[in-house]
Length: 164
Figure 1 (cartoon, rainbow, N blue to C red):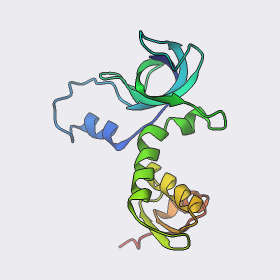
Figure 2: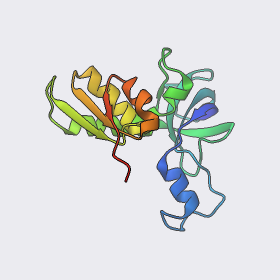
Figure 3: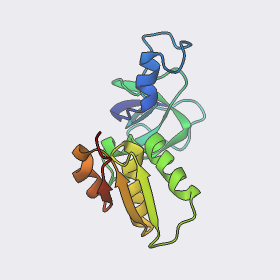
């Protein structure tokens, strides 16, 4: 399904591919961005759940990148964008929010128990802190001093490692 991109997620895999840290089987320049949010401009044969004009978010079709004006999403990994979520926030859901959801649901915490998040100032950490708040966990986020206010905006207590 084709979309006009309104926002794309930026993940560690993007810069790691660019720098060659994930091997050299990608020829550069390569399409960057594996998740995006936007407006449907065209649907393919057999796609019945979406129509032109729908606001959506999802993962890229093979060989495509989200850091473009227009791109292709996999219909099977695309969902409608909730109206109350901005395109910018929606573009982080397929990778960062899904990773945060998986991480926070792999542990068996009860409300009031403590969830310690290392790297709480990053995309996954910020989402995990918000999920922890919803589940009424006591969330302690470890991040750099420059991200203290951001981490605390999620309702987490923040801590930053001592610089040697």
